[in-house]
Length: 166
Image 1 (cartoon, one colour):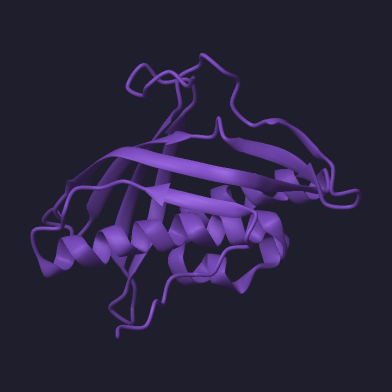
Image 2 (cartoon, helix red, strand yellow):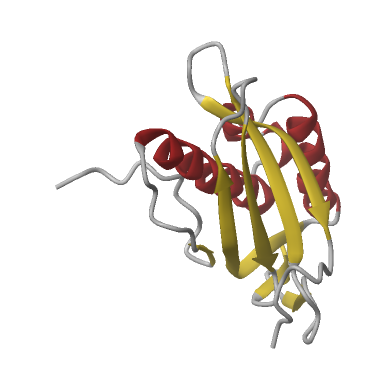
């Protein structure tokens, strides 16, 4: 039986990562890295904060700076994500001549609540009902050890490219 090497999230946080079936080894590696990068983000938001060593395993450069800033927003308010983050409409673009691959997707935070880390009281949803999700594009490049890392990230909140939450 294969070992599940994905980052383990707390039982109160889940990730539904919907993507097309990879057509080759590189696409599989890139999509796996994207899934792990989102899991590392959620792991950091839930506990260790921006100092979480998992972040630098999957994120680098400007993307690492941006994701640490996002994570710090949660920890500064003593909040933790609680619920299920849905990643869908995933598209993959093979590495270009510079060796960079891109993956775009929609994130729906409608079923993720802001939990208070001190009182354990669950607050409001991160994404309001009847609003579209966030369209995200990640650029990935191989690091010195040959592993893929997210090197750049662009996000558009309430994007018309994403479905409206219910």
